[in-house]
Image (cartoon, rainbow over all chains, first blue to last red; front, side, top):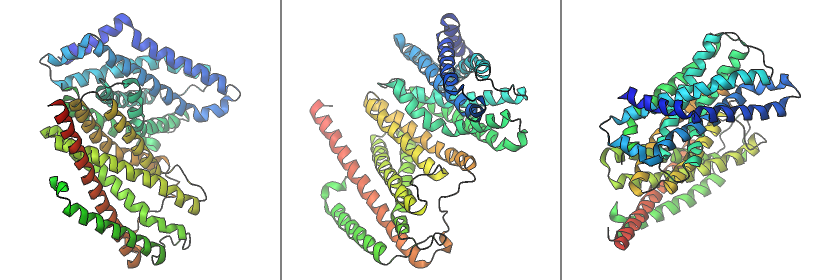
Length: 220
Length: 229
């Protein structure tokens, strides 16, 4: 059932491409604004680079999550999914994985441009970078899907989502920014493993909570 | 909890709380010792007797929100939602008191009202989260949905707090400006006054939550009467 739900999300996206494209293009235009503001001194910029990068990811994930969940509202699709004999936690899992995949795809477009536009040094340790992005994206998608589920049927859900998501996700964001900082200067993993641990804890805590609690969120 | 209608116990409690608040203020201003030995015996230190009880009460409130959330999801009983809302509102009120009293002390002790320090930030993040909580309740749709979703939010907000605190602690490991709790080192006069105020605030909190639940029940009754539910 999980694969069917996930396939549904991915198929819609494959046909319309609206979520990833809008996430990526919004991200790129923010980066463009960054490069206008910081082109005086790329050296100074590299100090803030990781923080600004994760801000972009946070903004685009709100965009993607909101779109992905509001699709469910059209023709009351979520109502039909809910009336199917499906374990509700699977709905959370499918939204989590699809949200994660959309974010990762948008990042694949944004990250190279970020490095190119802002003339940053090409980093080493590609494996660790990939691992960091995957873990942090999983965390953002987990708590994001949970919050998007909560705000789905509320009025002003597009405002409520970031208002609730940003404070909740702040520990993850701090950890991701710190890890990116460490990777940019090429520190060995030993020296920033505490941040890795925080990201890991966050992902576990919110994915388990999501699976356990989403039943109540979606209940009608 | 319905005994608020009978008026007697709540009224006695209110009188006791008012007397305790007055006495507490008198003791704190005139007799209490200041705590911080490093900064000298700063008069502004006396705000500690209000700041820390506020923090304790706020966290107690948010803890009750979490418990009430779990209970509401388990039982679906409206009573738990009312307890949750009342605790969330009062928790946020005391959270605001922390955020007001903290900078007043900070201005005197640090020369600046705010630093980016784990406890301050955790409190601010928690406060913002609960602003979102009330917005969700405002815009959430029909009653059952609001009650369910805010119960879920109350639970995940409480889950988030330790992770937030931990990450901020590592984030600003070099700025431990916030005084740490060294209860055992304090003189008994400091502790007695502190615990007296802690008791006052806890009683005040219980009284306010109780009163708020009473109002929520009246509102529900009024709704039932007007709509014939």
